[in-house]
Image (cartoon, rainbow, N blue to C red):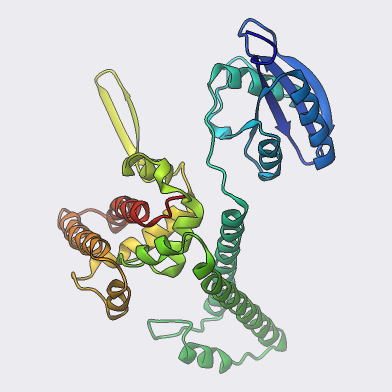
Length: 371
């Protein structure tokens, strides 16, 4: 093998300020060499990549997925190099290793990369990443609103102020809140400040929801988002979250692999004649898993398309309508069957969410753009 044909495997340990570099030659008998550290800046990375390209025409780079994002990946790809962003939780670790440094981590990545022991993640393009960041910002705003409402509810409970209707945070409930009077001014000020914080959180959530609704029609995955809403329990935000987090569903050969990626499959520890199965693994994408479980609650209702769903279904092709009806019929019957067997509602909704993922996989695979 000539020098031009030999592959150099580069492992990079990425931190906020520095990059630790190690290289491994394509020959397995060669030792891994540490190249030290460089500044984590585009100019320094460009200089490193140029020097590596002078060594050989075939360079493969890898680094762990983390908070620094995908800038290094895109810069390496722009140089024409192969680049893998590696799943940190799936990196093999020797039981006897007790020393961890940036240099050793980089050398380990290079060695495992050369041996083919690393598992890459899917890297979104810049447009997809931007939409995913917006969806996660909205999710953060929704969580902030829930927290603010919990503070108000806890404050009222401590002072024995009970709202006797079933549904809170309606206009009637807000009027009731404004009618609450306390003897001490400090209590009144505290309540009004908490209510103002809740209103600010609600306004922020509404703004982000409006931005998502405005940007989805321009997104290349808009046809898949629209088609997913044909399913019961899937509205706009759930569909956008699914596509933003999952991306190209065609990378999953079967729906079972998608279920595992979302952490919805049962855990198992079996050896010999002993078989032990536990709860779901929760090892996958939590954002999508939460949305699916929320949507699964709707299958406790009778089989019947809602009024809003009829308008959505009318705009979809017959094959999507058939999948939607098949999903509603099957999952509603399964919910009823599991309930009659005495299963807990949380277990039932998790099982329904797992099967929902399969129907969403089928619809998204049929409606995603070909390129």
